[in-house]
Image (cartoon, rainbow, N blue to C red):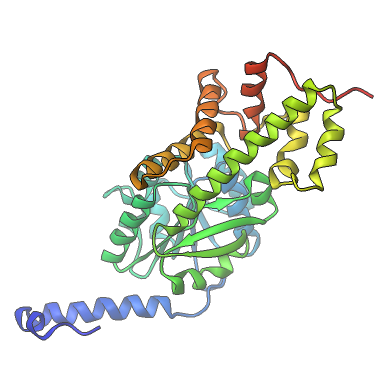
Length: 336
């Protein structure tokens, strides 16, 4: 798009030249050679339950990866695989062409990406790409995209769904928002972690993930209520789960969490604390949109009750504990 004649006349020749240089550099970055381990260095910020497995797939594929995590011990597995350790997000970005982040809260995203001194964007070279895979606020995704564009860089919001097993097995569903050309260019990286779904402009990946969380919340609530009902009715809850898993009530939640619930395995594939955060963002967006979603509100209150009982570091399948307390029961599989 050319500069309007009036604006062109009002600017010095050097500023006009700079404008077209920046556009040219941005365009050339998008249309460069396909991403491969030989031409693209990766940065990874956040090596928790999800990030550790996701990053590991990139290392196994031969990419040079530099990582940062506040708790270094959580990155040790990746270091043993050959990743390099950086002392700040800025340092990660200075050594990378594409920087992935998957951290806890929107405040963490803002800090690791936008802090003027230690943030990744401040260390990223022109044409570099930020990919935030944290479930965060759509408005923050838009803000990051604008900040990246100002520096002739690119930003994609790409939160994921599939839990710890999806991360380990590279079967995640990835919701991407941003420039479609950039998202397509990143496909060689996304495909190592799962399947990417382009949802629209910046922020739309986050909106899609929030809608996903609303769906999961009500599905999980239905699952644990069904288990409590089946138990109270005297059914063998293990047989009950097997019976409904192949019918209309079958779901990913049953596949991923049914046996874990019955085995009292509440290890986190996704933390209650983080799910409460996600549902809170959903409720804030609902208020802004003028939406009434009572199922979402109820699920958020029940998950908040888990936090109140000190169970925020358990997995989301621990919702069964809230329903058991309400009904003074303990759901256990029958002993043969």
